[in-house]
Length: 226
Image 1 (cartoon, one colour):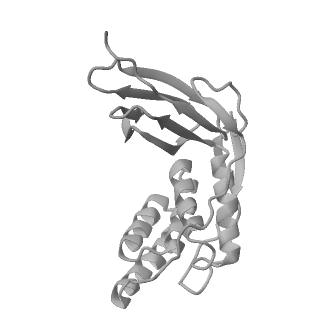
Image 2 (cartoon, rainbow, N blue to C red):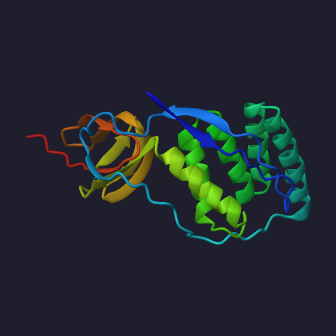
Image 3 (cartoon, rainbow, N blue to C red):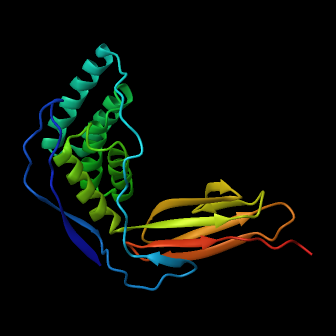
């Protein structure tokens, strides 16, 4: 099943100006309502919390680099308007590498959402929100909040906990961290594989199921070989 959500395609244009909001686009995203029970995890809540400001943006980019980034940014917007989304995203990424401005991240998030890449798009909006409203202006900040919540309705947050020193925890084959730690990771709703290992201990390999739109947690503890 899929849910159709509306993403307003309001892009930043030239810095200091805002491009008009384009026609609303309907995106096919996985249904945000849980259709199956969680497996292998404990659901803490079905309420996704908005990120809050954790840092201030300080523009230290040299003027010459910023001007090059502006040119790439403008070219990216033109590609986006022509619905050449992969090309637009690549240009936004090039611009951001020169000038790491939250406004560029905002447009990257919109583009990724249009490309049906909700996890990456949500991460872009998360960073925008963590810089607070000043770099992107309040009305765009509120749009970023709305987009983040819409996208997170199709995703899940998993908090892994481990106190066993030296144990390595992996999610879907990627190293999450070495214990002891408590760490949250955003994942697509659905099935995932949690593994853990440490010399002298019985390895762990467990399939889990995360319903979309939930915050869940899981603890890991290995047993020693006898």
